[in-house]
Image (cartoon, rainbow over all chains, first blue to last red; front, side):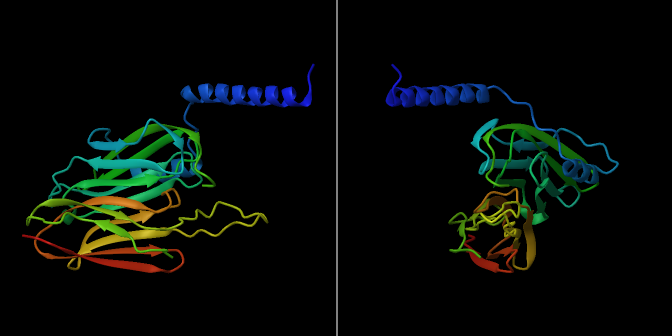
Length: 155
Length: 108
């Protein structure tokens, strides 16, 4: 006999089961979103005609976050930070947020260390990309994929 | 507009020539400009777009921020302290508000 109460109970159990299945599904790695046209344009402008190097720039982000509103991000470039050899800027780019350019950090010789920590928003599962500009024109690139369970609200 | 002053943390005592970490936390909504209100109108962007740090008139570090920076922007960066002096930190937002904090560095 399916009265209203058991119907509701079974219904809520079904909802809970679906939620559980979704969370299990969500635990599997989701592919990164396709990079936006804005990201590609910004990235190509930064890289210019140079050949970016993959070593020397560390981009640290969690592999997976529940909430995309508040994602810790740390950037560090190995550099002596001398007049002859230093980092001038590090750009932080999102491949799939509404806006590709998240931040640009600029360093000077007084910075001592080309290292910065902040918190960013991520709209969905995607690659985050950092581009460092060094004195002498060298360009370094780092890329990290972050799985986002719930996208940053309204970004 | 910041509802309350930013929080800033520097080491209590510093040796000349030491590289220190400076941690800053501003209070700001960082409204992205991509959201809509109940009536379907775009809520205008209101973010801190620029942060700068200088020491006795010399640039130390600066940041250009976009809407992808989380609300209440946290920025921690480093500085090589050449000697005693005052660190000046500035936050500029879309509403035209400039917030300036001066932090004397206790150098021994």
